[in-house]
Amino acid sequence: MSTNPRPIDDLGLWAQNFLQPSVLVEGLLLAACVALAWGLSWLVRRAVARDEGQKSVLFGDRLLDGALFPLLLLALGYLARTLAVYLGPVVLFKVAIPVLMSLAVIRVGVKVLQVAMGAAPWVRVLERSISWVAWLSVVLWVSGLLPVLLAEMDDLKWKIGGSTISLRTLIEGALTAGAVLIVALWISSAIEARLLRSAVGSQLSLRKAISNATRALLMFVGFMMAMTAVGIDLTALSVLGGAIGVGIGFGLQKLAANYVSGFVILAERSMRIGDNVRVDNFEGRITDITARYTLIRSPAGRESIVPNEILITNRVENLSLADPRVWLSTVVSVAYDTDVDLVRQLLIEAAAAQPRVLKDPGPSAALSAFGADGLEFTVGFWIADPENGQLNIRSEINLAILRSLREHRIEIPYPQRVVHMIPPSH
Image (cartoon, rainbow, N blue to C red; front, top):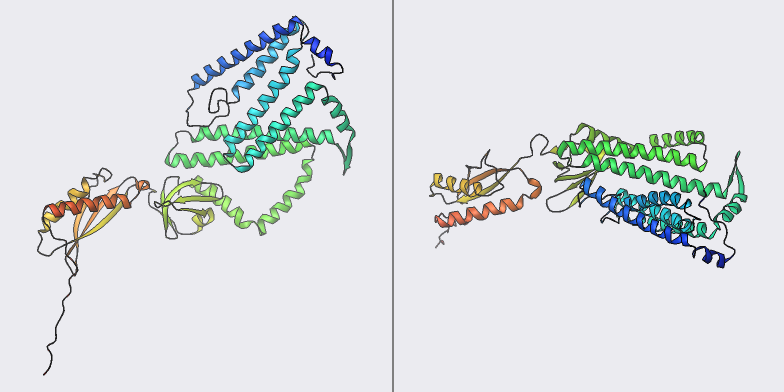
């Protein structure tokens, strides 16, 4: 049975249809569908035990905020409408089904864009566009104007090359293309979330590479299907592909090199998310590796966007490739008449008392130089979490050393200078 309503010529007849006893039964069926959809959504959410900190298309931030509830409600609404046909003329479901379909389209489109694209400014514009198109379609469908409008758009035709395209075909193709791309984004986002869940170190980088390749493949397939839905002959893209190839070979070779380098870095795992690296005297921790660039964040909070080609062609120091531990040191001067063995013991104890300093290998203290003003000791120690900062741990050790030396009345010498006085000549 078709759900497209016929044009409403008599508002009195429309109101009279809603006064029929079967409308009450349809209302009860619709209320039962809402309750059942809510219950099923609650059970599914509880069964999968979704992490509250993770974005989800199906569940959203709250139970009724995701796409699962309107999708279940739409499916149950179709089943209830089929049952209502045997009980009498269908009136309420002719309005309810288009509304539920519009709600499902809006919720799925909005949630997929939020998960896949994040908080980009243009995402809000796309969300509003989807809402306007969906609700406008509902109004035209319920009022009976949609078939008339489609027939009028079908009469507006123009010829492009050897093909004849109507306004209706163009709009339907554009909507189909948008739906295909949203589904492709949904699938790629679900695969990415699955791959990156509980991944650390080298696994995170490898899974990031697989995720990027999967998203690119799905978007390419979705783009091809969208072009077919619009009615564009894909054989015509061969000439465009050749032109793009020439452009990459000449003007876009740097951009192409960065993309290729990104996949090489992720595949070889020579640099991984979480590694501490030094590039062009900039030292920091890798926080993200994209297809085009790598993001490095220094302990001071500065971020450097490094094109992937530089990481492949230039010398890069990876401070945590084979071992995440980092060796740090600080220098202390004491007076020449100080007990050297006691100083070494105090320095080692001050460094070992810090929780972030590793016990194996433990800290060490060595007499490193005979300074102009006193004996210079170098205190060396290892840490396993350089991403938590290096200056702060060095400061804590220096403060502990200062307290220990003062407690044992060990002198930290001031700079000394010898002044020779030449006696005046008579």
